[in-house]
Image 1: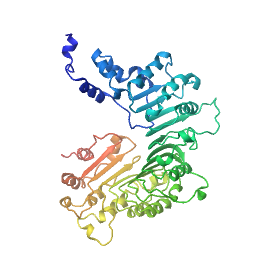
Image 2 (image 1 turned 60 degrees about the horizontal axis):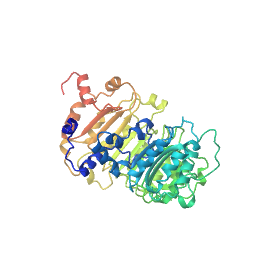
Image 3 (image 1 turned 90 degrees about the vertical axis):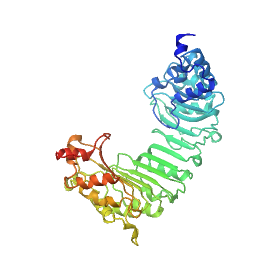
Image 4 (image 1 turned 45 degrees about the vertical axis):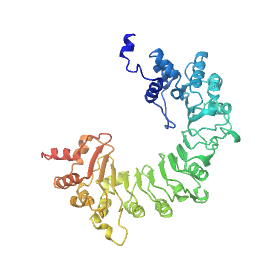
Length: 482
């Protein structure tokens, strides 16, 4: 018996136990659609199954006969495409037996390789198309179309992430990635920049989850109109449309539960929300840099009457009269996240965090233990947590916070608003300066300490500095003991 065998804790383990351990050691990208992978780190040459097989003969035998270890392939087309590499890919696929495959295929945009130069490897990859379960494809459009034409029908594809770009030297006519009888039916779809929707002719009715980057509002409408089974939807980098008046009828998205909408850099007027209704929406996040919410938002919420649980409004210019009406129309909200963007004029007129004061005042008006006894529906009766983002050197009105939480002695009252969390996030500026600017007033500190002892979570975070405790910082500033 060799010294290596003596020190090997796996000696004596049955092969099936060792195989299970190997499976836990594999890091799969699984559900991560559309992610970028580093070719040198994800290439076949240094992958984990091969590393396991290089330890010793027994490990190699177990690894080679464990199909699950070989169900994820990350292939960069810019690496050498000789016969040895093609053989390695064939053997890899063969070792996965009949299991479903997760495929990650990449050709960096800075690498000039024609489809002909990649064809042999793509042919090898396409032979396993009937077993593809998840696809992450990042390559030129002409390469992508060639791969899918060889792959045929993608019967088992459940999730698909596509990034594409067009070579300057290539002129493509309008085309679709699949023929009518080979259109995939994924449940989840990610589309990166570089696509025309007519090109991605999937069976939209099958999709329940979608994320699209860089898209027009008209394209958003097209997707929503053709995807009646959507449950989770994310649109990023949305550009506003012209001629929105003739867009079409209002769409009722009966199954949509989560909706994230991030406008592009240009001013976005949110006309899309005049054409959709979401009666089951529970999570809604809206981000539009320095854009007003507009009346379409309130009309959208009033028309949908969704059971909103979480609402996020980020970077938009928020006027409290609009925000207040929106919140009063959504009494089911438990988590509220606000991060308003101030214009230059607003910065000059109001040094305090814009809209935080009227919001806190309205919350404080009905913060007592008996606020649910009113005949009318109180303001945000279900609110559990409030997250507020600060930009630049704005300060937060800490003196209004104790009244929002109410008396510490009433925390256990079932008729009290259930709010227990306030998180203030500083997104810009110098940490040391902002901590001083946002220091809690000395006369407010005792009340916040009592609330924290009663169970309230009151925190201040600078960017990703989660170690900051503003109460401690404030106490030190006043040279007092916590």
